[in-house]
Every structure is written in C-alpha cells, then in structure tokens.
Length: 244
Image (tube, rainbow, N blue to C red):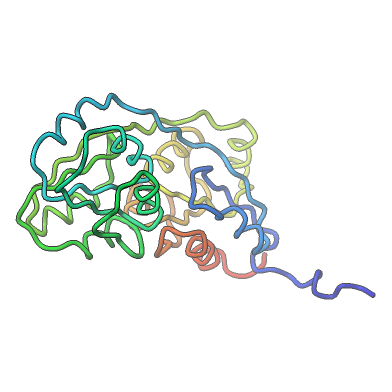
C-alpha cells in the first residue's frame, strides 16, 4: 500500500536556504522538516581576545554584568568572582551556559535578544559592564544607556570572516538560494564581501541583525521574533510563502 502521507508537499519543498553554522540549535533540522534543502556554511569564526581588560574591569564595582552571548561565559568563568554583582543573560541559551559554569543569572531576557533584555531591565542609574564582541551590536548598550545606565563594553572575542566554499559563492551568484538566514551583522558583512549583491532575500534573527543586513544593501524579508529555531522557521515561511 502506498504511503500517501509521504507524498504530501511540505511548505518549503523546492526551496534552498543558506544558513550559518552558528545558528540556534535545531535550525537546520527544523528547516529540513519543513521541506527545505539546507546549505550550511561557516561565514565567521570566533577568536578569543586577551582576558586582561575584562579582568581589570571586574576589579571595579558594577551594579550589573550583562552577558550578551554564550561565548562570553567562557571568559567570565576564567576571571575573578562575580560575587555581589547582579548578572543578566541576553536569553535562555546564555542563561543555561551561565548556570553550567556555576553562575546563576539574576535576570534572563525572554524571548532572548538585546531589545528584549532592555525591556526587562530596570531603570538606572548605575554601572553596567557589557563583555562580548569586539564590535558589539547596538543593543543592548544603546537601550540600557537610554534607561539611565552607564554602560562599558569590553571585548572578549572578535568575529572574523571565514572564506566561503566555491560552491556556495557560485550558488549565491547563480540564484540557487531562496533565502539567507542572517544571525548577526558579521554574517551579513561576510556574505556581501564574499559574494556581492544582489543576493537572496534575508531572514534576520532579531532587529539588530536586520538593521545590519539592510545597511549592507540586502533585502530583509522577515525578522524572527525570538532567537530560536522555531521562530526562524516561521520567519522563513513568512518570507517565502508556500511551495514553489
């Protein structure tokens, strides 16, 4: 007997989606479950920076340390204690990484992202240490400053572009990809630098990634509301619609 369910079209059948390898857990599998052909590429890699600036900063008094990515947790765990300082996590995944390192966050943005953290954060005044990327996104620093906090970013890692495989560059220029998932501004910049414009329509992970992609000249067609695989799939569906 034929399996009639196996022949049923899925919403992303016939679509090819280009996804950064460092996307929220489960993103590629969820897109494939919806029918998409997924091509994953390492647009960027993370390089650790010397920890002395963070160690020196942590010797000063802070009202809050805001942790903007799970990668920052490694640097914090290797530095002196955070005793007496409240810790905020940009989202549930970062909060889980903090707990695994023995640091219990006092505030977790839900849904995650810089804008959600700003919304959940109390009003200032006070001092906030923001360890993270050497070239951080505008949020949450701008939003926290607007709420009366004095914010000091400290770079603990740098994001650098990775060479893209030739087949990805050719596929981009040949129009193979129906959509590109942009998880951060560094992904948008790396993609345009390697492949040029125009490119596929962009599905961005949050407002900061969307703004960065737009600044690069990309066509942002949808923005995921939450930093989760399910939200990215919803945004891809919104951008691409039904089967081709």
